[in-house]
Image (cartoon, rainbow, N blue to C red; front, side, top):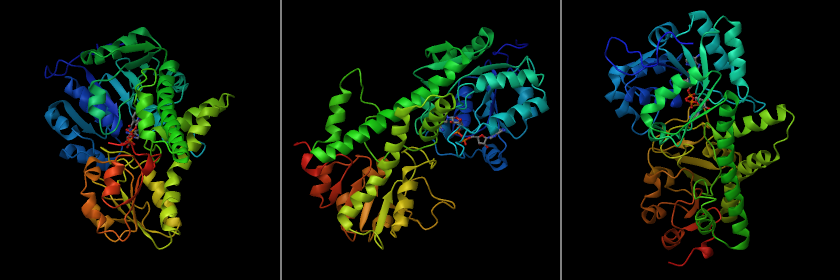
Length: 449
Ligand SMILES: NC(=O)c1ccc[n+]([C@@H]2O[C@H](COP(=O)([O-])OP(=O)(O)OC[C@H]3O[C@@H](n4cnc5c(N)ncnc54)[C@H](O)[C@@H]3O)[C@@H](O)[C@H]2O)c1
């Protein structure tokens, strides 16, 4: 039920809708800025004072290519506030984009989502408002939220599930050109309102029930993570039998039933989504009495994969105690400053436990906070590599892949280079004089040019 259409405008300044976004993190900020770029007036509300202050100064609190420019271009339609009342007053469709981190059990922590319900009750959301869940939440959450809204006298507030599939580093393009928009609703009228907001994108909109929409998100991430763990196991077997996983993946990917995406062997997946979403789906299944055996293996393979680099280093250096190892790239993938569940954290932790002296460089991560205080963060790749006994390429930033490796080799104490992302050309690295290993790419299996 809605008293105002999604396209209601404010003061005649915009012909688009009035949108609120609760949570101005990676997803919320991109969602808000992209919806503003489509002509909507957007109020972003966060509880983090420093974040809201930064946004009001025009600073972007995260590294996401293109975001700052798009934010500046549409600043007239964007507002940042700590006040939920203000947001409710000026918005009709309310996206929830708060964090849903893992608990110790692996289940998704829904405390932020539940806090939003407390706040909406206290502030008095009403029939104008349509609550849209963008946060990744376990199947059943929408039904729980619907029941909570009803029990709190917010029965006329609408509800839709609208999972987000953007990738950090390409978030704006992903949001504006999605493969699909998934809209799960309890009432067709609510779904219609949300679908109308996305109409300018011209993307396929899939309409379904709330539980199915919630499951599409988990199943998609779990499938992509499974592809990664699968190719990592193939890489490990390649190392045993003398095949080259890059060639194998290329050959597999040419099969249209398989496709080339997510078939890049490496040091395992990390980030704010895959590890927690795979764990949450496994827990969700377990809580409902089903043992999701495949996902248990996907997680285990991923954990072991991060540690395989340590054995590669030991193969060339013997004991790692007192050895200096340089980690190149720290963010969980290129194009972001996000360090959540980054493989670099596990690697650095293992190396420190082995007694290594760890240096590190990342083009955008300039502060490890209280994580891994013993790691020496350098301002340049050459600073991290100077005097190192070995280097590990952990995040395939183009600026790292494109380094003058031949020149840098001479600055290292021992030229051992492990390419944890199979981003470097093995032949060139061998010719440059490195003792080189990729993942599943034995030097003698490199394809003849
Ligand atoms: N990061 C991704 O690539 C990605 C992609 C798809 C889906 N998701 C999902 O989107 C959700 C958000 O992820 P994120 O990476 O943007 O998280 P984030 O931690 O970057 O941002 C969450 C924001 O919500 C704010 N917040 C918490 N409680 C609040 C409240 N009551 N009111 C207002 N703000 C509040 C926090 O201060 C923070 O700024 C998660 O469920 C995640 O799984 C993330």
